[in-house]
Image (cartoon, rainbow, N blue to C red; front, side, top):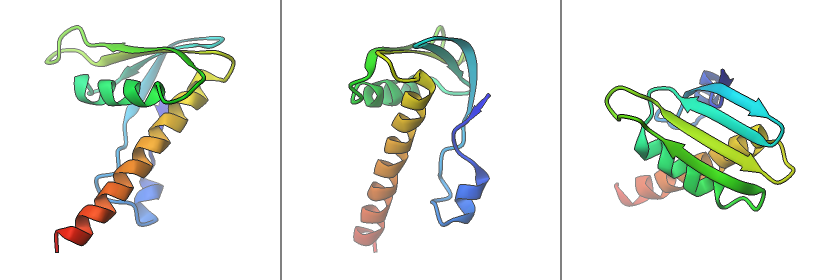
Length: 111
């Protein structure tokens, strides 16, 4: 299991909606990574894949959900040279940063 978020971050002032998700590594060979996003389907799978394509190291990025009510998203990532686990974690960190920026701006205008 790859733990992307931790409750420690919640203590450091992050939003209470901070994403903590379970990721099971199904296959990791060289520059290929296949992971299961437990409890997640199209919404998060699509968002992660879109962010992965912002990294020039990404060669292949996609996901599959056999059935949204009974299965988890399976994400496949292939990179040029960089470790695909690092590329995935970096993408998730960029997504979190953008969420935090959005939340901050929204709080200012929602007053």
